[in-house]
Image (cartoon, rainbow, N blue to C red):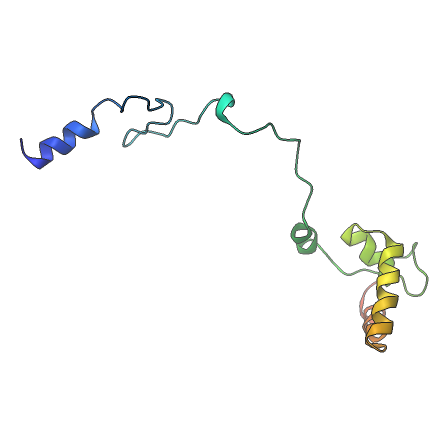
Length: 116
């Protein structure tokens, strides 16, 4: 028997003993998905959006309702989905650590960002 005949015979032969028929793939056929018994645990519903998803839809706006100085922290907190008080504490800490550079960034955001 020549090699081409052997390859044709092995491609159409029965699966090996113990092989799962649902996962055996035939050339040219659509793959068969395993049944629910072999899949992982059921999902808990839609996954919450990650930080990358939130940042991709982010737009810098100042808050008109939740503001102490210019509303920059209020607007950031709403868009990032975090507590505004924690963000204000972080900005204050960054201002102290950076020697006032974070305050300049806040001031620039106050001037540049539209109210919304």
